[in-house]
Length: 121
Image (cartoon, rainbow, N blue to C red; front, side, top):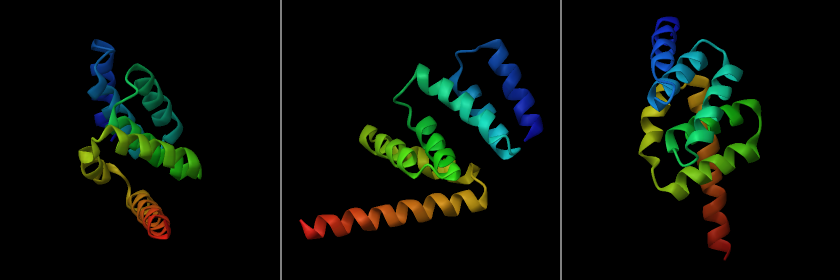
């Protein structure tokens, strides 16, 4: 992760508008345990492009990790509304095991709640 972070940082210095390098930087920071720094980078990237599912999904995990369930739900809803959920599976490979389980459990229970509410209607 440190080497990837250094490379991605250099790429960002060369082209600050390169979204992929910024996301790579954030992923490396997350892997190294710098969750707040990763959050700041992703928030900056989101301000430039508010409809990017890969950024929204990563921010959702960080919000859930911090215990901000409502905020995490809102970000996941945005990903679903945008319709680009294909980013979720590759992102799960980046997440640490405990965070992957957190996201899977959260999404599973949230989906069950939605289904139960629909059945009641």
